[in-house]
Image (cartoon, rainbow, N blue to C red; front, side):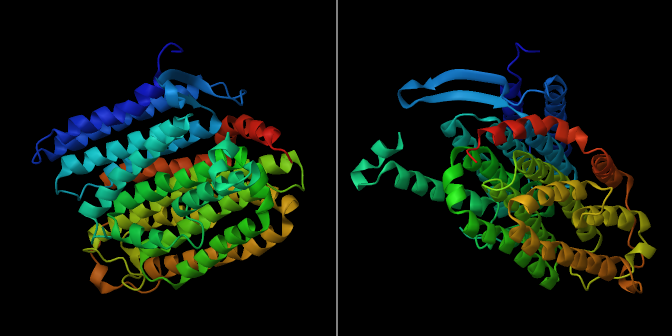
Amino acid sequence: MNGLPLISILTFLPLVGAALVFGVDRERRQLARGLTLAANILALALVAALWVNTNPGEGGMQFTERHVWIPSLGIEYHVGLDGLGLVMLMLAALVIPMAVLASEKINDNVPLYCGLFLFLQGGLFGAFTALNFFHWFLFWELSLIPAFFLIKLWGTKALGPAVEAKFAWLGWGAGKAYLVLFIGALLGFAVKVPLWPFHTWLPLTYSEAPTPVSMALTGVMSKLGVYGFVRLLLPIFPEPMHALLTPLLWLAVATIVLSTFAAFAQRDLKRILAYSSINHLGYCLLGVFAAASATGTALDRTAALNGVVLQMFNHGITASLLFCFVAFLEDRSNGARGLEDFGGLRKVAPVFCGLMGIALFSSLGLPGLNGFIGEFLIFKGVFPLVPWAAVLALPGLLVTAIFILTVIQKVWCGPLNEKWARLPDLTYNEGAVVFPATLLMFVLGVWPQFIIAVINPTVAHWVRQLPF
């Protein structure tokens, strides 16, 4: 096993699969879906093999591969895995096939559609394992191309077309150039997460994209931004992050609180979930920024960052599952997804409503489900580090409960809208998509150590490298 380049095989497997699927005739839809799911299953099996063969006691990189690429520019093909990368690979390996399975109603140019999903998965795998900046940037950008075409072609409408030496010519010293580089990287990742006020693209994108594509966007792609904060900004730019800590914390608090009020004001289920996604990722940013505080202990920083990584994984599962349920609801109602369009659906679709209710309660952070422990660890770490930011972020939890309970009340409860009296309950095929994710939410709710045991050595290693 150690002699095999498992990471390279995993990265290029979806890309080879995409090439095969692109070559399938447009009319052979089932063949395209079958090849895509076969590639997804093989990728999941490879990630599982990496998971089983990883030594959780090591905080450094494992399964590393290193090859000379462009030596004159210091560019290498350099990949490896630690706890963070492994968790993100597992998330991508789980969410992408879920999105493909939820695309049963997509019948227009299925080979291109499925091939783009595999292309996206390959880009994500490459970005989560790259250890060279150039290599990482290529895969980062590679993941954006299929996402753009998936939204453009299948969406409801088009969205519209040594540091000092490098900067000596500007008269900048190393300190100023270092700060400028940090701000540039910060802005790039802030848009990707997104951090308020760079969030305005996300609700529109998620609401106009086909719902299975929204699953991939919120489940995995949005995590690339948080991944950049954790993998690059905090370890490489800890001093600038500490210097700008107060404004960064205010932005994280604004992301958490304002997005919940925006979600509460929406009447479209996909836009509600889009703003809810911003809220949950805001907690991740709060944990990352708090780790740059000079107060508190290493244990506090470790708790906060463990919570960040766990929240990334758990939110990816829960949010993609919620969008999956919205896709099923749209299929049953000819595209209706307004908060006021339904009512009393639990009377005709109790299994559907019950399982979606579990996912909603997970998003709310109910103890016993996977959504609780990540937020708990974040606040456990943030309170001793920056107590004022933790207190100001708490209203986000309250308003989240209000708008999620409002969704449950408006859609599932009350008198049955006779228009939906014959609305079918969850089918066996749909159950095969959502039951595994639902089970995983319960497993991680009562046994979060399954993930924490993998990420804690990596997080502890990061914390030891911080200069605070």
